[in-house]
Image (cartoon, rainbow, N blue to C red):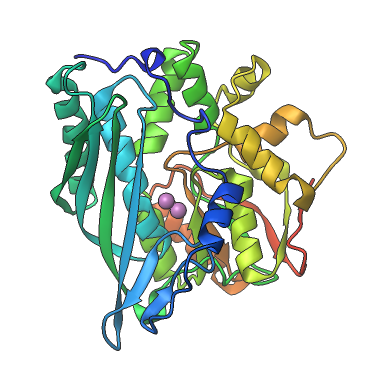
Length: 346
Ligand code: CO
Ligand code: CO
């Protein structure tokens, strides 16, 4: 099979091609305010997807995401990108209905068979999610990009938001972290075959089961972990909810090999930006090293759900997540009262 040679591209995962939160906030602050009363979730809380009420019972959930290749295998890249795009529907407690694709590809310099594999990966992953890709738009571009816009539906009383975390909630994570660091090592040609296989498995794994479990358990607050990293998305949820968190470092699931790659300097630019963005909010235990800090801030692609779970629902949620074969079912800490949205890590 033909491969995309990541090393030949100007960009790639975690290169910092993603806009930082700061850049984004400046742009958004200059745009006109949103006024439509049917908007249940808009831009104000920086949630995962837009939620738009269509009748007394239901809302449309809509999201869009695309990025440059992060693995050499084009089929896997298509799968990962599709899983990542659909995840924002799952993070809202929604059910995906259909998708459209966004394609940028250097059709004159790379063989069309590569694009075919990318698209096939996306279609197969969408099928696994129970949806079809029914159109899209493509352009000729020196650097490949692929992703989906996904439309879903959610019952109004089941919307899972990022601004509903409450003191006393348990924080539960459903995938291990470190995919950005491993992707960076892949781009440098330094990742082991074993770690490449594992990171592809993790990034292409759908958050479908995790989402269905949290909806069934009656969860009110969650987000998915993507470009702003575990700490960035946790902070986003805490800020939107007006609370803080206490974490237990040893309970945070981390992919095999990640620490080794960090020690060799495979730290994506986006990961460094992420740590920079949250660092003033974090109270670290003295013994926590810089390497660990980078891992916790690592920019993820298609990460797991971070669920804020009311105490009385925890046991049931954990059972449901385990039954759904989630890649991790890790209770990593708890939500605490704190108006400054700080994160204590011990
Ligand atoms: Co998201
Ligand atoms: Co997104």
